[in-house]
Image 1 (spheres, rainbow, N blue to C red):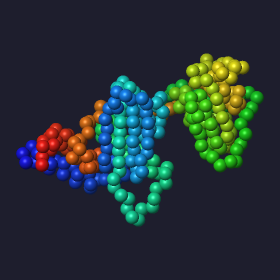
Image 2: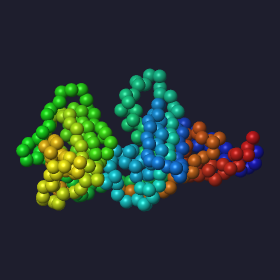
Image 3: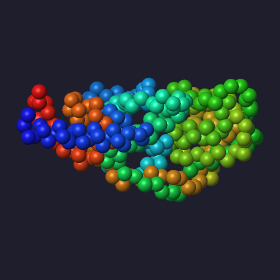
Image 4: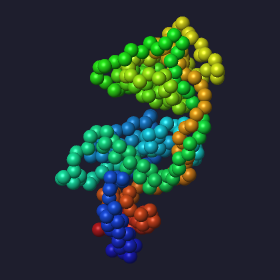
Length: 296
């Protein structure tokens, strides 16, 4: 074994030791991050058993939105490639839970996985952020003239789903969940100011390309053609609600630093807990690791 190979192996063992000592639920033990291939056709996300995660074709801005539970309009700054360059991620948590630990619910497991994703973004993309509250354009969701057309529901549910572009179905949900989905569609915060506190089931259908912002202080046009109905008109005609433009406080994630991800380490070292390895030590292994490929 050459001196270079020896140094690389010692550094890798130090990484392993430091990682094993610091392993918690805040990081993945095994993670691969690489640019998506030229045949990239969209973004796909899958939560893996045991707290793992697989994401295909996701730009960094999408990953930030997913990890921190914010929408795109709540992310400010950063390089332009954050929105355009897709990445594939496969991350696993290989540490078995303690025998005495109570099993996590599905929602708890997802929350833990997203916390690990935050650590992964900080480690591999050198992501650094801070939060600010800024005044931005918002919409207030209010009851339209003539009253609401919603009826309270007592059925089991609590689900809201996009049934394809331009079709939203809610099943026994509070209107805060409707406002959240409208925010995703409009790229602007929507605040529930209806005063309605019940849970409702509904189906909302509109023409996606007709989604446009009404002029401040005016009513959106009401169309008699259901094939050409804007989201604003659909809310008013189908649910008896309307959106009023205004301004209000919005919590924003400000990108202080973001870099293209560091390269994955050689296959021989793939099972070491790299997320917990100090960046300076991992860099040494990355530089010296070609010698490991020749080590027998």
